[in-house]
Image (cartoon, rainbow, N blue to C red):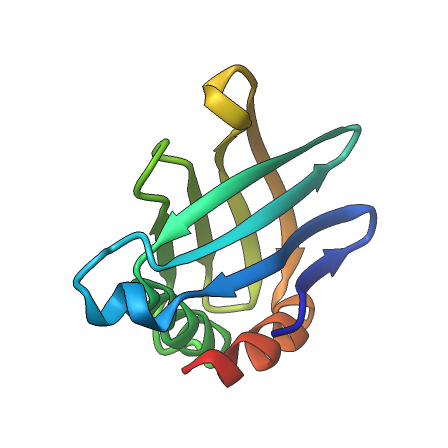
Length: 133
């Protein structure tokens, strides 16, 4: 699977090293999907590992597409191991706020972030993760 990038100016949210383990899902293990997320928010940056159930990632992908289409105005995605979060909030005229908190290995580092983007920067990201659904 490919990388998923949302870029607005020098701000970036990137999902990469995406791995899905169907045998774990079949066995009932909710930790069947993992990926890294890179955040560059103004002059701050960090990388955190996310683990989740593929069903939750697919739900996230659907909700991001609904956000882009203005059928929804907020999406929250939470990681099940360390509790990292990503929140997307959009208003009716397409102004987008992306915020959250990601944790590094063993929760030794933490990056709280928030940056502004717009609906047009969400387009490519929404389109690329649509293929996971």
